[in-house]
Length: 192
Length: 411
Image (cartoon, rainbow over all chains, first blue to last red; front, side):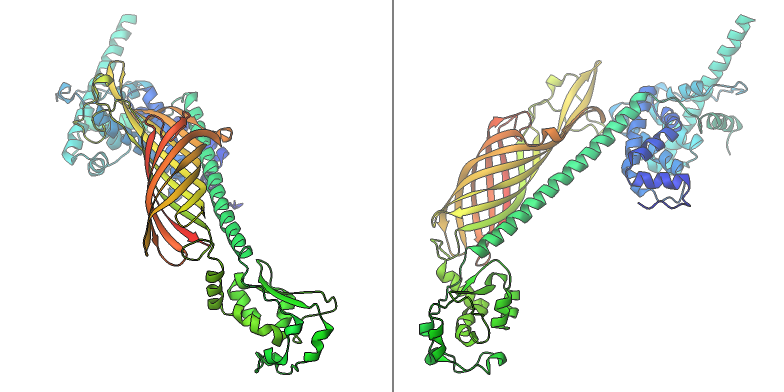
C-alpha cells in the first residue's frame, strides 16, 4: 500500500488498518480504548459487560474497516460501530431477560438542583442502574443526540415508546441525583 | 417544549459522559489480539489449502494430459526405400513447395536402411518437421496431440527436406486431418473399453455431506427467534436432538477400468465442515444458551471399487464400495455463552495432516453420458466411521451421508 508523504496521521492509520497491519490495529486500540470503554459503560449493566462489548466492538471495527469511507472522522466511525454493537447486545439480551417494567411506575418529576459536581463514576453508575430500555433511549437521545424517530428505527420500537422510555429514564435519574445530593448533605451535616 | 429540569438533567449527563474516559482491563486487548491472530492464521491456512487444492488439480490435469498424449501412438509409418517407386508417388504434388520435386526412383538404393517413421509425441514441434512440410504448422498448432516428428535412422548424412516430402506426404495426410486422427484412435485403442476409449479417466465433483453430530440436550428453539421462547431450568429437561453437521465435499479422482463393468478409483476429497450445537446451560440458577461452533477442513484419500450394474446407451447405473483415510487440515472451535466467546481452540500448522478418521464407503449412482468422453455423475454416498479421532468428521454418530455430483473425462 502506498503511503503518501502528505497523508495525515489518521489517514496513515486508516491505510494501515485497511491493510490489516497489526501495529495499526494496536495503535487504534491504544488511542481509543479508554474513550470507547466509557461509551460501553453507558450501555452496559456493569464493567464486565462493558469490557465484553468493547472487545466485540473492536473486533467488529477491524473486520469492517474496509467499509469506512473516510468522509468523517475515524473516531466518529469507531464510536458508531461500538454503539451499534452495544445496541445489538441489548437487543439480544432484551429477549432473554424480561424487563420488569412494572417496577418502574411513573411519578412526579423530582427536582434536583444539580449544583453538586457528580463524578463520572457516580453518573455512570446511575445510568447503569436504569432498566435496559431506559438506558438505551437516554444514551441515544440525551448523549448521542439521535431523534426519537431514529431511536425508534434503531431499537425497533415505536416513537411513542421511545418518548415514554426517555421520560421514565429522566425521572429515575433525577430521583437518583436527588438521593445522592440528599445523602451528601446529610453526610456533610454529620461531619460538621 | 423541553422541560428546563429535563434539559438540565440531559446536559449534566452529556457534559460529564460524552467524552469521558475509563480504564480498560488488560484482558480486552489480549482477547482482541488473540482473535486477530486466529483470523490471520485461518486466512493463511485457507490460502494454503486453496493453493494446495489448485496445485493438485493443475498437476492432475497436466499429468493426465501428458500421459494421454504419450501413451497413444497414432500410427507408425515405416517406409522402406525398397517400396519407394514411381507408382507409389502421388500423381499431384501436395503443395507448392513440392512442385519442383523430381522423383528419383534410382536414389532409393543409396539409402538401403532409411526408415522414416511418424509417431505422436507430447513434445515439441521440431524444425525438421517444419522443413519437411510447411503444411504441418497449422495442424500441429491446432491439435497438440497430433504433433508429429519424422525420425530418420540409419543414414547420418540424410537430412529431411522436400526431397522426401512426396514420399511422406501420403502418410502425413492421415494425421493432418483431426477427424481421421480421431477415428484412428477409436479403432486402435479399444483396450476392453466399451466405447473404444482408454481405460483411464479423471473426474472432479462436489456436493454436501451431512453427519448427525451432537447428542447434547438442545434448548427448545433459539432464544433470538422469539421472545416467548423459554429455556428449560434444567438442561436435562431439554429434548435431546441430533444437530446435523453440514460439510462441503470437493473431490478429484482417477479411475481405471479393469473390464467393461469393473473399475477402481482413487483420488482426494477436500471436506470443509461447519457445525453449531446448542446446549441448555444452568449457570448460577439461570438458564442460558450456549453454542459450540466447529469449523474444520479435512483431506480424504478414498480407494473405491465400482461395478456397473446397468449399462444403457445414454447412462450407466453402478454401485461402489471402498475405504478412505481422512487427514485433518485445520480447525477452529469456539464455545459461546449468550453470544460471547467463552473459550476458543484453533489448530496450528503442526495439526495439519494428522490422521482424523478411517471410513468404509458405500455409494450408488448414475453416470449420464454427455458426449464421447464426458459423463455426468450423480452419486449418493454413505460413510461409516471405523477408526476415529476427536477431530473426525462423523464422531458422535459414525454414519454420514453425502450427495456428490461431478464430471468424468475418459481418455
